[in-house]
Length: 91
Picture 1 (cartoon, rainbow, N blue to C red):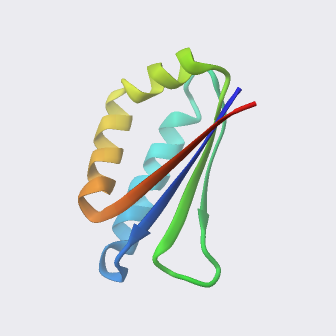
Picture 2: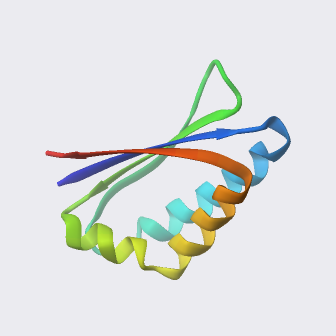
């Protein structure tokens, strides 16, 4: 299995827009074959910090996810409004 932690740093003015994009991405991704978990976490102490935590069955499922239209759309929109940092773990 693979785990991805995508940390999102966003300015307050764009926070709600980024959260809506993340929610749409999550809803679509949860329907994909190979998606085990896909969650959004918001920092309790810093409004401008979020994390999307993803768990995938294998690299093939993750590659298929990265090629979907909803991934390209929502991640592209998030990248226009925020900075992203990705951590990837195999387990």
